[in-house]
Length: 203
Image (cartoon, rainbow, N blue to C red; front, top):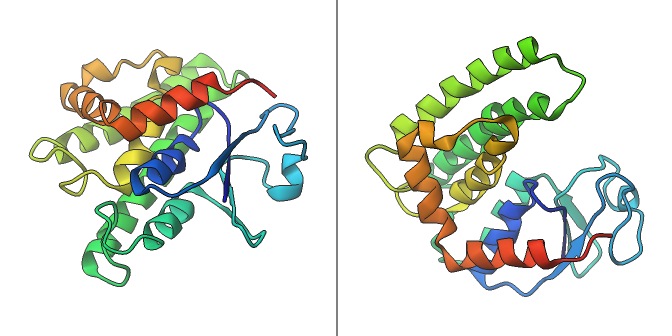
């Protein structure tokens, strides 16, 4: 199994999940500009959408989209603590969180990376994002993690919230979220994933 990743992207989420689950995998870096991979491929041949993450299974099948990848991985290890059993109400709640993070936080950050968007327009996107961060802060006031214990949604949210400094947004403005990020970053799987990604040579 290979995970194709780029540093400081949402591919950190499945990387964390692989380590949490103890699944053997190979980490392969992708150059997001040239689309070349560290193992000598054109990443567009693996994922014509052009973005990480991509998970290549031992049979050659390719799975993309972070929320799909992490659920697939969790279902490989029955009884794990990261995801409720498929088909349960709790699993639907997990999917609700994954969709919220994808559509409101991940997609909400995307325009802020675009250098062609004028700052006044970015300010409008930021105001919408702030409302979503307010909601997350409220949701985490009474519990340490989105579903009570650390799980797939937390790995995804952590990966996306790591982008906030790029936009001059300080997570410390939401103390609950700042404490949440510190809890997650202290996890051995998270520290190991971040260290390995930082140590991987550029393509």
